[in-house]
Length: 302
Image 1: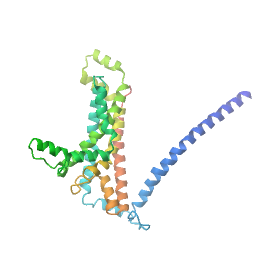
Image 2: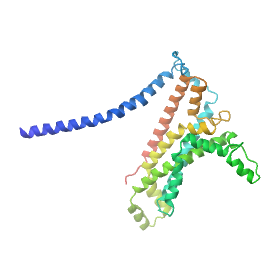
Image 3: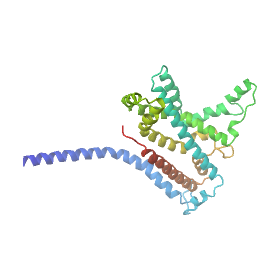
Image 4: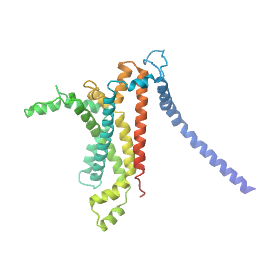
């Protein structure tokens, strides 16, 4: 009997502890519902209306806003720009991030200085980073123009060349985000035991073979995290485009995020902008989950 009471008392304390732990989740859950789930559901509802963003009245239009998206004159080029920002930035950020992490993992002289320099752009907001590069590349008074004139060369207006400007924005985004990728890859390298490399060297494996057969497979968890993080951040790139080109010239550098901003604030078509935002969210989720599933299949156990 005494044994049963002790078991019941232990079970009660376990249940009580579990309840207390669950209560700790409530503030975070409430914030997620209030700031994420509720606005998201509200955005879905608004996307089926012709609300202008400030009026108290709106009309139900059904799927008209979604149908209009495929008839938008600049939609194809905007989607292509967004894909370039997303995939281009992700590929380059991860290649450079792994390269810097491998270099700094060798504990070379001055590695702390290199780590600081590479990571420093990450601490600057995207809006400020865009303005910095704008004042360097601006045709009329940019720093690059002064450098060209110093060597008696004719400066070109790089921010007025359409697709070239798209590539410049992508490279600026890579410059700003490589430091984050580097830090995560460095953390991943710390989890790989040196025993693997010693055994591979005894079998005659060189540096490149060690990287392909040991480092890269064991870095897959870090690659998964970085790829998904980079894809999400780059596909919804907004602030850097806004300050660097404002979507110009003539909308040739616009992304889905900047188009959504223009539809909402300039054209006062909040319902239409919400539809675009929902489509962009679905696109990001599908691409990110697909990349995650592909990388998960390549995971190996250390």
